[in-house]
Image: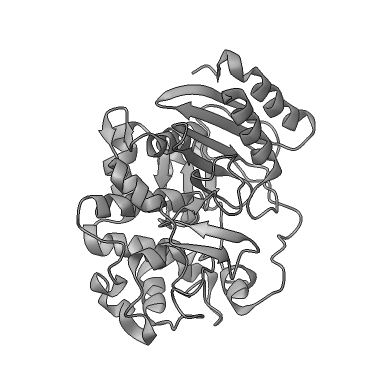
Length: 372
């Protein structure tokens, strides 16, 4: 498959290439899709740390928290089908969740990081994250770390278990299995939550950041979410990690597939004739649930039902109605309903920036200049 650079996007290609010339990238891909048309799709560099394997059009990249936007879309499909409502209590579909004062926590509060369950302060084995039922039982029994509904506090890993268990209780399948059967497969998307062994050879190796992210003043919610030795699963990048379904953190994708999915969200919810969401369901998903200083991430954030909104902290271009998600190390995907545009950036040389990686921001800003 050849790279695609529409005539108006030559400036964007130069910016993409400049990142490699400046030593900012190992391997990367950036894609822009508007109303189903691929306007820009370029990749380059290497898929391994030793720089022996090309980063090509088949390379899958771990996209970490960009996975949350995909999970949000899958939950929105249940709402769209009338099987779930954003304003209903989680305990309606997951009765055990009502414990410890959580009976009134709603689905939309859980998806917008308001449930007060950003992680676990009590010591645990990082491998526990690979035991789905164990983690869900701990979350169901846990008392919130703040009054639910009063603030957001980013649920870095636990979001996936909340969204995934809500989905499983309603649908009967795991969220990753439903993604493969109902969306990725029919739409021909290289997008996975739970990777089969047959795909392992396509996955890019990560060059991890050499510095730590700046979380500001350290608090218990920040410790629980990010700053304990057990705040995330062990062996990220290993086989067990790849096979697991953790809908907050271990999605694997190409930039083209993410951009196509987000372009569909920006343009009525359909992709190549497949109705992923109705227009009303997209609007319901992206509607603001809470806006303010997050208790975990050091940003003023606006949250929809599982997606970051661009109306507060704005790393996704000039339009406040744009929504999407960023991932650890710099990956991001966005949908701009004003222009009907989806964009995605993936890479394997990670930065320590929590949101708004400078490489992604430059590419997004340049893409908008080309669209003008």
